[in-house]
Length: 272
Image (cartoon, rainbow, N blue to C red):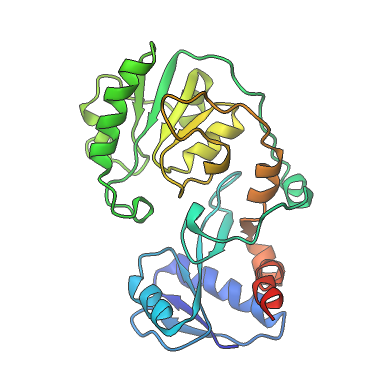
């Protein structure tokens, strides 16, 4: 099996790919570390994020697989790395269906009881043009959400800019009357529900007991979210979702020791 690990010279990319290389070596599996400008035929390409579309296109054309590494989804996201086949976030295959609770318990993360009410609807901003949006017109989407929510709910709408927006000046939230200037944790304390296209803040909301309306299946809370503004908010069981999402992300130590690959290589063992 030929495995190529691709980077674009960014420090965090080369660092994480070297950790993954160490994990492969722990299994006696060789790999090549290459620059993303120079794709080469392989069975599996491993890359950080989905910005190297040339690698993804090359793999699809040549019939190879690809693994996407990114930040984790809960806990300290900068100390956890998500790794999934064939896409980003909810579009990836993490081989995580119907998992046991071992990794969820290991993380030590708990979720709060569902909130029954709140003071406002929290509408989540995202960075326009971000890869997670898959080319969607986010400005049009958030304007539509704001307009329709005003007719459906008798609650004020607070728009929360994405953290990467500079003081909200570049945010699609900038045109709305109520803009959050608090931390996400503070915003969630009084939120009735969260409305998001596919932001990972949906995970924070679910863990805080705030129901989520998610618009795109790329959302990591898609299985336990409502998908239509007029449908009842989901406040059902989250346990299996929690067990499954714990198999989406790994610590640096787990990647280096090969524990992440021990899980991910099951794809090829099953297909034999």
